[in-house]
Structures are given as structure tokens and as C-alpha cells.
Image 1 (spheres, rainbow, N blue to C red):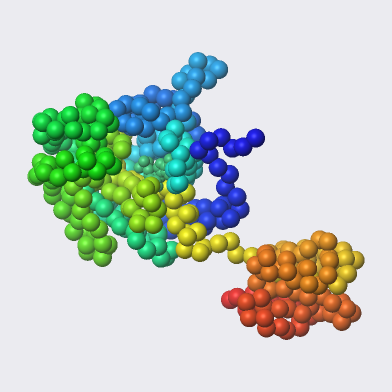
Image 2: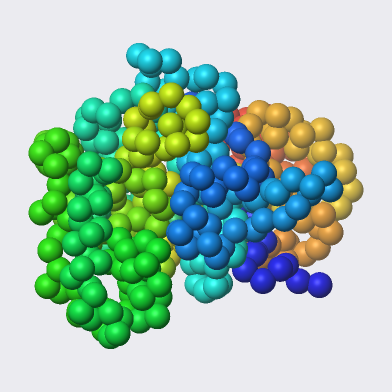
Length: 415
Ligand code: AMP
């Protein structure tokens, strides 16, 4: 038996990268006031129909929906913004003057065509800010993202921003698009012909080169933005510049979910092939109300952890080995040394050994393979006088210590 098409096992070499991101995120985003929320893996299908928009690809083609034994229509969450809004409304987390910052991480499910970097179960880490339409929130929340990924030193990442307007100005742009595209309708790909009827804004991010060449002359949405929305967008762009965050304006950037208003943005990588989006997000000032809550402007983004992890792996980030690998001259010495080994672990060290206690050579080989920082060799002389010969694996430097001093020694070396 194998894992289901489009799903995969995350093995320790993968989970190590995920944990780096997840644990780093909890610390980093706490500094901005984000607290974690965990919502169920499945929700009522209705939530996503109303929240994401029934003409979107996600809702029309990609949802894992089923009827449970009680006859309810259930859907495995394809994204979390709608579910977080549902929780915010249900628990009345946002009062009229509150700003609430939530973060989440976990698996999402979409029935997409699997390919490199695209899975049917994938993982997202995301943040949502509820309660303000101030452009400062957009700037601050994008900055939080950029400074989160900055220490990983990933090259070829580009922040792309746009404003998709809202109900005050977008309808005029949609009407313009329909009219402008009407003449070339027959030359558009099948998907775009459908989008023209169902969700015309989405034609702009069609990947088909022929379609894109036909869109060259189209006016950008920025020509249509209301005074207020234009001001908002300018404030976001100025704020990013003030913080020294490079970005590129792309008037054709539209997101795959209907709920976005005003600011929309994506972070794309030149190192990921066709699935180049590492994360995406924006403002969604109407979603909470659409889902039955009070008028609550909001802003958020979601990062694809699978894609981030593959970028980290390509940069050579890998699991570190144990602090100490112990090599014994005799198997019986290992048995007798067990209380000491346990104590080292209680003192905070990662300690491993080869249970079979073969030849020195085979044990050293294994220490190398496990990428141990130190190897502690206990041969006849060391066993007799209660010492360990500590070999630093990267430099091959060696020094002999009393056994009880090992934990302190390693701690000092790595301080
Ligand atoms: P979205 O919710 O569509 O805005 O996606 C946000 C991010 O999640 C994307 O930029 C990707 O990094 C990631 N993502 C979305 N769908 C998938 C998928 N099927 N497989 C892997 N990552 C995905």
C-alpha cells in the first residue's frame, strides 16, 4: 500500500524543516502580538461556499467534501481564513474597538493536479489581523512576514503587490474587462472563456501565453480605484518603502479567492519552478460580515510550508546530528554506562550509540553517518580510569575528560 495520490509522508528530514519554521514562527509572531488558534480540520461545506466564493477554483473543483453519518455536508478545510473568521464570530473575539491577531499552522486539503510543490494535503502557516482597516496593519503584517523569512537568506524571492479594489470600484473594472475581452473571446483559452462568465478578474492570472499576449493592452485595475482605495494603496506602498522592504507592483495580480479587498500580495520564488508562489494574502474587509458577523475589516496571509521547506532544503539546511555519539570497546560497558548516558540526556544532551557495539571502525562510521558533533570513545584505558576521549568530528581534535565533566564540556564548547 502507498500513501494516496497527492499526499506524502513527512519523514524526519522533512519534519525537521517544518519544525524550524513552525517553532520560529511562534516566537517571531508573538513579538507582534499574534496568538495561535487551532480550528477543526473539517467544517460545514457551507462555510467555504459562502466564504471563498462558489465561482473560485477551490470551491468549484478542489474541495474534499462528503456527507458524514449524520447527513451533514462536511469539507476538509482547503484554507483557513474562512474558518478563523467563523471562530472569531462564534466566540465573539473582536469587539468594536479591539484588534485581534491570530496565527495558525496545519494541513489543508485541495483536490488539485499533483505536481512538484503541489499536493492534495499541504501545510500552511498563516496570520490574520481583525478589527482595523488602517493601512498600517497591512504594512506591519507584511513586514512581520518579511522579517520572518529574512534570516533564512533565501535568494530570488520577490514581493508582488496590487490593489484589487472593493465593491465601490471593482464592479466598474469587471464590466470594463468583460467588454474589452468580448472582441477576443474566441481566441481565449477555454478556462478564460469560462472565467469571463463566472469570475472575470481571474482571467488576468491565466498562465496561457496566448491569453497573456491578448491582455497586454488592457487597462490596469489601478485606473479604476476609488480615491479612498487609491489612498489606502499608496499608504501601503509608502509604508513598505519606509521600512526598506522591496516590492514590485503588478496590476495583474489577482488572488484565487474572492474575499480579497484592496491590498493583495504574493511572495514568489524564482527557485520553485511552475509552483512559484510561496505565500499569498491581502485585505478582506467584508468576509466576517459575509459570514454573519459584525462589520470587521481584516488582513492576513498564508505561507505554504511545503514550498518553504523545499527552499530551505535546497539551501542545504538539514537536521543536525546528535551532540554526542558514544563508542564502546565492549558491549557490557554500554550496559554499565547506561545510568551515565541517561544522566547526560537529562542534562540536555542528545546522546546516541550503536547498540550492537561492533568494531571501533564500524561505530566511528556510524557516528559519521549520524553527523554527530562529538564522538566519545571509551576504550580499555578510558574504561579503566573513568574517562572519555572526546573527538570533535568537524575538526578531528581530541581531548580526554573525566566522564562526569562531559556535559559541562560540550555546553561550554557550544556556548
Ligand atoms: P492560497 O491559500 O491559495 O493563497 O495559497 C497560499 C500558499 O499556500 C501558496 O502560495 C502556496 O505556497 C501554498 N499552497 C497552496 N496550494 C498548495 C498545494 N496544493 N500544495 C502545496 N502548497 C500549496
